[in-house]
Image 1 (cartoon, rainbow, N blue to C red):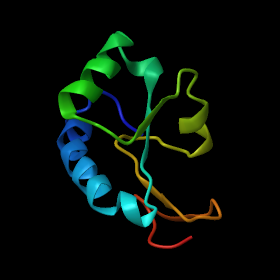
Image 2 (tube, rainbow, N blue to C red):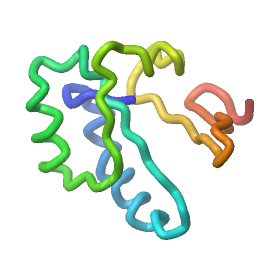
Image 3 (tube, one colour):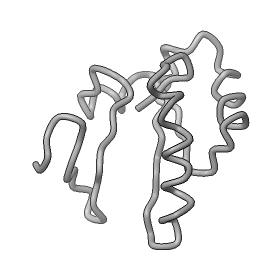
Length: 96
């Protein structure tokens, strides 16, 4: 979960892109969920993606449904989800 105005989000995106480039051929996927309701302008998201050279999947959480479902109270928020869809790690716990 991220937003263009979030300094820590901006700082981690280059590392996420490098990680994706390194592991994408091994089946690793990154889905970056933008907290669209918090953006001043939707166009900022597209500019951000282009500026940072993001090639992994970016989705827009326009109604805040995804952030509520994953209980993302602060951003950036990261989750490691296995191939069965089970959250194995997030920012607050080591193993669920």
